[in-house]
Length: 235
Image (cartoon, rainbow, N blue to C red):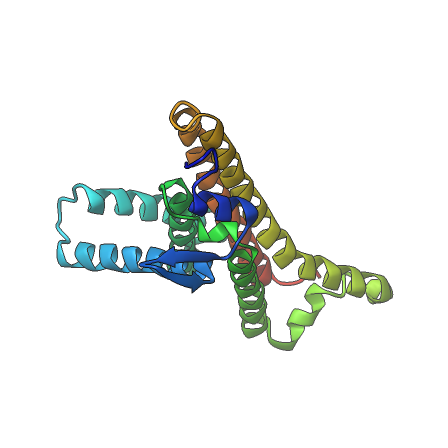
């Protein structure tokens, strides 16, 4: 902070400017840059774990095995053993990726890519397209009955309602994740401006819990959407 003004990186985060200066050069779309940073870290961590796999896990291997095993048990218990085995890698990868991006907002000098609506919207659209493709592959032409209701008489009423309901899912997914992570970052910046040390350290634990919950909610809703697509129409 110089002359009573916040640091330029903090100011750009607060105002929502989508650029960052690296090595004297301005990089546009910083959320894309930080997304690639996050992916690079995860790829490197996965490569290191792959090379150091042991029968008696420890350290980083033990941490990721605990996460994946917990997610696998939860998914299999909810979707069934067969479907859970198929979709656990996707859902676990999505949770870890979103969780890692959320955590980047707690690192000084970094921003959480999920604090940008473009990042969350892309993931929400991916989920929307994915579960509908899964439903069409599984049910073929009968997947249309997901939108028509339990009776032919109700088709004129149920069809538009179901279409609006399904189209609202990516909107809800993207805005929920973006709004919560963005709000947390703004609150943290305000606390940092008022009290750089005492104002930020106490809320780190609270925001860590919040960022974990937001990743879990996105993962949970994705799992439910896939499950509903596989279960097919009620009739």
